[in-house]
Amino acid sequence: MARVLNAALGDRPREVFRHLVEAFLSSGEPVGSRTLSQRLPLSLSPASIRNVMADLESMGLLYAPHTSAGRAPTEKGLRLFVDGLLEVGELAPDERIAIEGRMTGSGRGLEDLLTQATSLLSGLSNCAGLLVSTKLDAPLKHVEFTSIAPGKALVVMVSEDGQVENRLIDTPAGLPGSAMIEASNYLNARLRGRTLESARAEILAELDGERAELDALTAKIVAEGLATLSLPAGAPRDAAEKVLIVRGTSHLLDSVEAQADIERVRTLFEDIERKADLIQLLELARDGDGVRIFIGSENRLFSLSGSSIIAAPYANSAGKVVGVIGVLGPTRLNYGRIIPMVDYTAKVVGRLLG
Image (cartoon, rainbow, N blue to C red; front, side, top):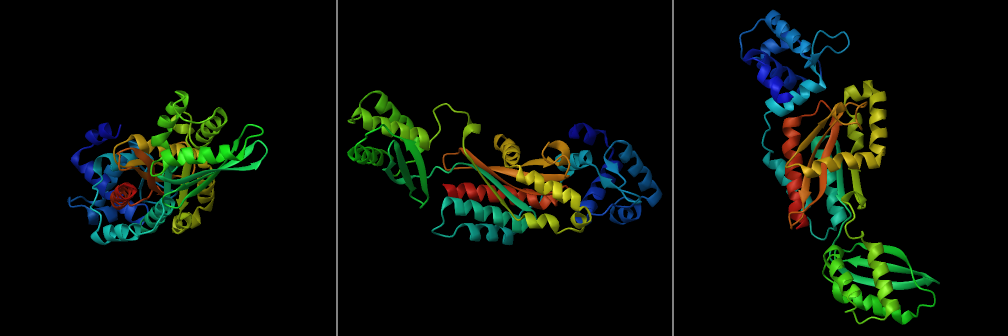
């Protein structure tokens, strides 16, 4: 649709429209013909510009907020601008240095790295930072089974980056303590230095083929532990536990427009609280190449709050997309500056995950 509209615009309407949107994104205020006459390289009178603006309004690209004499782009107009007229700039060298420097500190766990990236992006963009990731699957250092009650055991899983995860599993009645030790030793020998995902199929195949030198009870404990610690084989991606990080929501209250339209901001905060819907929206960016942009009512979640999301997927060292990072803000975002910022941050996160 944006390409069709862009092709339908003549050179003069296209220039008027482009400069109007750029002025609006810069100031946040409706743009009048006099302001445009000072910005345009064309020699057009304010009266001629008003005629062009009226044509653009009839096409659904502009509207007049309240009783203002100026015009602002509609969501349809913003989509046309972003897809066909936006000139995306290069990320400033100091911004690249800031992103690299604050994310390459030593001794940081994976979750801390992702939180830092989200906070950093929020600070640089003056928007809320968002990140969604599949459950972190770091190489393992140690696995241990511990009996805590009749028929119950705790599986403690320690990753090489220091993360500790505990899961409760069911065990056969009357299970001897030696079976717990044997199950721990068996898994440690096969999991140490590997991710659970990479070793799971191999271990299950060994158990199914009865090649593991384990008695029936111990083998059952190992299988139960694997089933609890990871998804069943063939489970859909949406069944995976997702990690959602949101930082810098206070930025959404910074603008004058936000203070004047507190009801819209309240609706936006309620949208953010709907974690499952927000994750689903961000997941849409996983399947695209590069940055994805969602403007206002184009997505159901933000149809009432009038907000935009700029998001990009990031991949691990194997090239597998494992998450999405982006920013959330008003539709009046500085798209040209924030798009390369999100893109670069996603690439840095992917590189550091490797």
